[in-house]
Image (tube, rainbow, N blue to C red):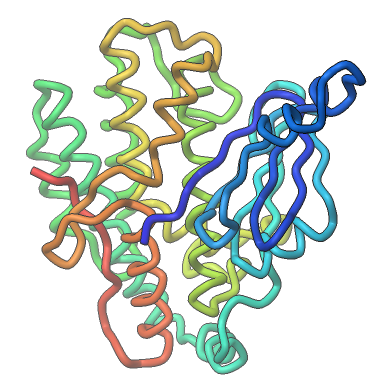
Length: 312
């Protein structure tokens, strides 16, 4: 079942009652003129078991400890945003799988040969999906992308990922002079950053649910990064975020700021339809299949990660 994504961009009191998230508005709760029946009717209620991601984007949001505990038990990812309204924090449960210790051991003991093979699969899938984005939105030559995707070797020693990225971003926004992809670069990088942060949270949540450590990557290695594996596994999913951003830019909608309309479109990321295992599936569900297959690869039960493709 697809889990819900909730976004809170205004002051709110969030608490728990009967295994449900209860949302109250401070201006209603503080008012002495409003009757209690009205206050009760103004509450919003969501079953916690239906929640997958919650985004907190206002300094005057209050959560009870009991709610946080229940959300983590439900493996709900809590994302917090900074003063610029960009995601900066992620809270996940420490334990998300019954056979976690065995899966941890299998992951930690994975050989370099296995990790290089898994990285090869990851980059192949990423470049193929980037090719699909260019095919859908642009009229540029994509034969080089197709060649690179098919020629990726174990560990990507030829660095086809970087070659593909350089060409991909050059063609992605032809109407934006000298566009450079980077966290601190000019818009529409703000849209990409926001979308990737949501995607990263979904992947990290699913890794924990599959009994894996998000810290230990198959390629990314950074002593200050607690989500190296999430950064690895999200690579083939990035083009799905890119497709939303390209669509926003191409329709002429303003992207200098993260408007409510833009955020609404980016918050649809978990529900995007993708093809995985020859079946159409919401992106969030597909990610759970990806992380589950990765765990089985570490355990020697599978040799190939299940990655998504675009719906044709």
